[in-house]
Image 1 (cartoon, rainbow, N blue to C red):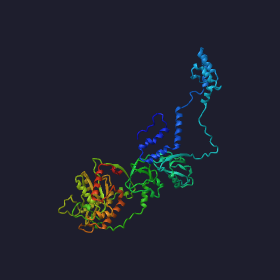
Image 2 (cartoon, one colour):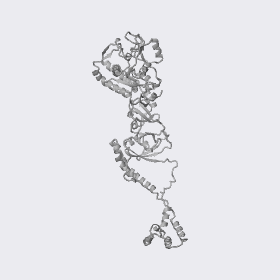
Image 3 (spheres, rainbow, N blue to C red):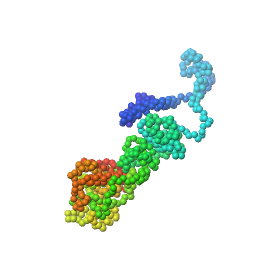
Image 4 (cartoon, rainbow, N blue to C red):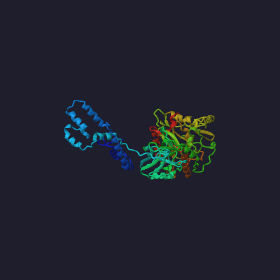
Length: 599
């Protein structure tokens, strides 16, 4: 903000400066509401009175009207005695005559040539003379005399502080509670950046006695909060300050990614709904204070408003989440035994014998990310890929029939030198037209099972007594070629990939509404899950319902791990949105878990 002008003169007072502030700040104020608040605040009569008192005291202090000498009469006597010891001339005689007059006055500063005027003026001076008057004034103390302390004062009586704060429509930025032992209303917390915090006058533990002259005795905290909420402009508090000193906050800035939606107005446990901070899954929050084990103070990252709001702490939210009943959209379908399952289409990339996608896969346990099963917050930091670093792994997830493989294929064809896909492993025999390492990596069943035991597969399945799977090394092979690896997996495999090595960017391909599916998929085909020959068939209403239901389950269970959601309403539009996201990922900074920046 540019420097504010203080007027044309260098001696312009504080009162005049404050009067011009709203007009000078107007170009820098974003809303009419804020400008109105400034005019009301600087137009407050009590503020004007305080400023005028301040200027008077400042002027008095600046002039410093202290007497140079406290005894001018004694000085005059000493001067007369000194002059009498000198050779007398006309000037000395005249000065001695003047000093001997009882009504001696301003003769020091007047010319002796104006003696007649002085003699005439001095006749109106009292007999004790102005020098004597000067001494009386100089020796007198003009400090205010305070009344004596009452004799019946209680030594244990608490000191009371009167505080006046000016607020507009923003919350005061403090919460209160009733002390369980004393029944007193005390300040429970001060919200960082709020009006109370900015004033520096109210502290945690202060006992509240009155609000705008209204006693809070026998009132519930909810009633007091209502009084505060209805108050505008200046609010006067009578409080008893706490004797406990607040510990200095030494916390550094911590940013977290919210893994759930939160609406304070719907939270019955929050101590003050007005002080709550609403956020949605994926929002990045800056944690301002963690002093309270149950309620943290936070603000949205990048928000210019310094005021913090209350959010449930990680521990408190985890405890509440664990007590909730799981959401079941539809009764779960019976899952067949793993040995009877087919294998995913992603195991066969653009091959002739594509099979069904209705299958289950094993995934390596990841203790580091098991806590993500209770989605609360994840500490994050900004990360931007450097030129010499490997590309981030692109993970695509979505329900059957949503068009995920079509999108992946279009991206791959657009630039085969820049994008790559993994080659799956299998234990089935190699066919005549197949080359090892091209369509599949062919290995023995014993070696495949050994790799399973050694957790070398991201996921795998079994079909007609043959294993198929995607290995971790196949991902590394693509990244080692300085390519962007496009990988589609089942959602439960994402946790295993969220590591320092891969730094995955997870994109969820989501279906549109049923009505839009009927319109856009009427001529499309889906691989039949009942035909072992892998023939295609037209979409049915059951396919649409299953696609949407499956997408809902994915979002509920794993949505906190998705970095971007693309609705495949139109294949071309979804493709453009996908490629734009991939291009931006290589040049812009993104929020990632802090442990991704440390091996």
